[in-house]
Amino acid sequence: MTGRRRVVITGIGPITPIGTTRDGLWDGLRRERSAVRTLTRFDPAMFRSRNAAEIADFRPDDFLERKRAKRLDRFGQLAVAAARLAVDDARLDLAVENRERVGAMMGSALGGVAFAETQVGVALRDGFKAVDPSLALTVFAGAASCNIAIEFGVQGPNSTNAMSCASGTIAVGQAFRAIRDGDADVMLAGAAEAPLAPLCFGAFAIIRAMSTRNDDPARASRPFDRDRDGFVMGEGACVLVLEERTRALARGAHVYAEIVGFGYSNDAHHMTAPRPDGSQAARSMQLALDDGHVAAHEVGYVNAHGSSTPLNDSTETSALKRVFGASAAPPPVSSTKAYYGHALGASGAFELAITALAVEREWLPPTLNLETPGPGCDLDYIANAGRAARVDYALSNSFGFGGINAAVVLRRAE
Image (cartoon, rainbow, N blue to C red; front, side, top):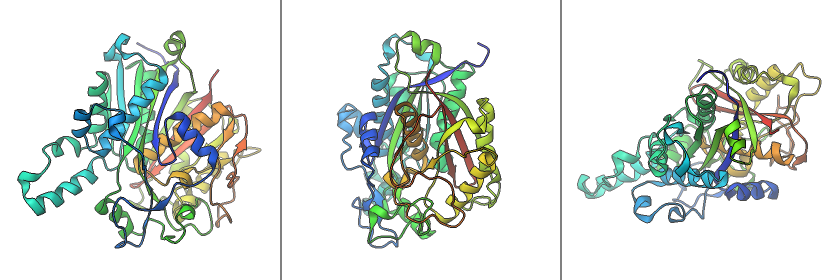
């Protein structure tokens, strides 16, 4: 098959701290309240940072057969459950599909490391014979896409990347290319993350990457604000159903938005600090715009990575100015991480779902907790209250440790 085919989003399956299902996520956004609280999954008293955005009501038996659920760790359960939600939302009947033309692309920064952490404790306490025999099959990040393939019997392109906090965006971008280039007709694409365990959590606390606003958790994540002091860790999963546009329309699928461009790059600078001038972050955005044949002035909204760390937010602002500085009116920008924390690799998948819904429903979510913009943070960040707006093109950014930058451009459905 040749030529560039058009790719649309027809299913949205989120499991997030602010809501599960497409409508649950949207309702959570419209409430304009943070889900960040003091961490309860374990006692965080040993750490400087003690806040997190947890999913309190996830029951794997609601999505998987009980026997199957027991074979998966929380990371795997979240991935498969989000895929189930996405397939159901898309009303996709896989029984009539050519399953060799349906694939799965996922992302995860840490995969099943949190489950491995618990099993190390079991081994030290009770010996290696007590270790869960599923450990070898759950710890690797590829368990996300492989378990989705098994659950749904899909035999097309399959991979899970572990590109830090850009993983979800890269997974969706790669799935977009697989369909556009003719390697698949349908892709289940997104990310899952379950990092709320002492060692995983503590690793980020040790390097002082997370907020220490422990006395006011709901205001701890504050992207672009002068008093931001680090991100808040979250968890969750989100899977999107991507389809070749002609076949989606032929089966009467609802189209949320069209994916038109994807770009990614690397700072080649530092493992944790972004390149100060934002040049490669800007390049990833420009590559995505060029890929979609979209001019900067056509973009009506940017969902920023906006992690609430001192370096990221000012650097991302600089990168946005590089891309949109020549526009007569730079687009409004918001970071939605103040709602649900930073779910590492899953964040980009959350945010692409949010961006698609924002474009479709003509409402741009706000940047919560933005009281006084920090130095160098001087764009229109849609502070604290959402905004009604009709947007034809929108861009979603994700950046990660190791200098990874990724961006996806969406277009309003025709």
